[in-house]
Length: 290
Image 1 (tube, one colour):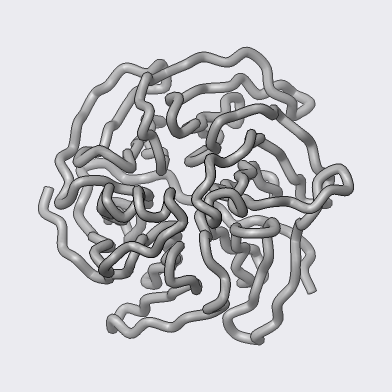
Image 2 (spheres, rainbow, N blue to C red; image 1 turned 90 degrees about the vertical axis):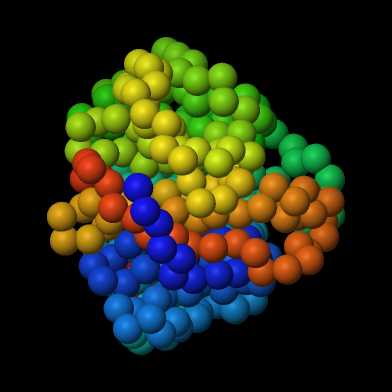
């Protein structure tokens, strides 16, 4: 696969493809960027850093993870607000990845972002579900580091990358709670995740120069070399769903962030390639905002 670089930054993350527009974040510099087809880039929320997840709502508003929970902004009207900033009455330290549940709500993972900012080891994380009516359900706690996640096409399993541990599949019960858990991969640097139309899982690694494509049982069916030493996120797009976008980062930059320091140079790149298989589209959420 041939990749072309289309954007750069200090540590790119939070990919989302919306038609001809490409959304992404820079967790170090801050801000939510939208690249238009002509290559021009617009930026919103420049002060918001450590954003690991972006989703579009049905009204065109963008949901944004990060410090303190999930906020939103509308690119056209300029309106902003907060979707979720507390769990069980306690302030949320941070939210990393999010993914639609297919019914208007989202699955998301919490993360101890204040500790990361201080250069300390983050505390325990958890997985949660927020339905379209904003009913919050705790799925599991005590995780090491929540990262990429997605339900399968049938909505019966939830795949999750627990960084520093591996990739897991949870059964989803009819009431929305988690059932049995199966470890699919012993990939400790697992990071971003995407599904293709065949139901297979694509996984990036923050210390790996390849993408893994695995079956739902964990069998590795493809290793795709990347134009860099590591990758944070992966998304599909394009008219046929075969455009493949990947954010490439430097392990040295990741080490600097873990120490609470800024990477020395903007060495992160956003690349685009062409996949032989189409990706599963990411649907919009249906929250009442404003």
